[in-house]
Length: 195
Image 1 (cartoon, rainbow, N blue to C red):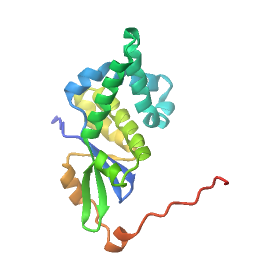
Image 2: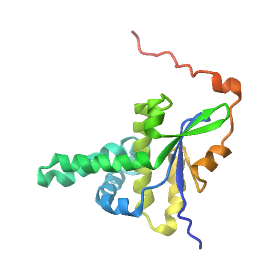
Image 3: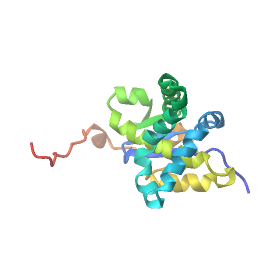
Image 4: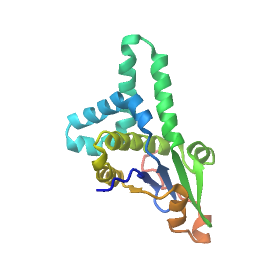
């Protein structure tokens, strides 16, 4: 059996308009954070499959932050926990690119540049970030021979997919918008909350 380690996660933020392409963290980063990642996966699984699958993607980032803080609680050093949290989440950003649809195809932007340009807002990124933590827990905490199957299952649950394509190859393979579609501004739905 051939094992393909070239697995990248693609999450749609807005279908046919905005995608996040993510390369999994390195083995070294996993080894530094394995206890917290394992604790998150264990915590989610301990509440049952339905909880893990329905709530897990939404709360995985928060659970990881809690686990890292717990690991520093004996030392009474919150700054150490904050540094580890910042470093881990900075690595998730570094390994992610945002693909933004335009008239000539998809533009690739780093996460911070996409947020600054207004293509992706902070709340969208927080949701993606939590999904990335969920995916990371499942991807790394399984045997190498089973990673591809588990990565596909986790990606499907997150309404995304895995690919061995590079980010530029993926951008070129996604459908292009017509110039009329690219120039249309998205219309926000009116709030159902009474004013």
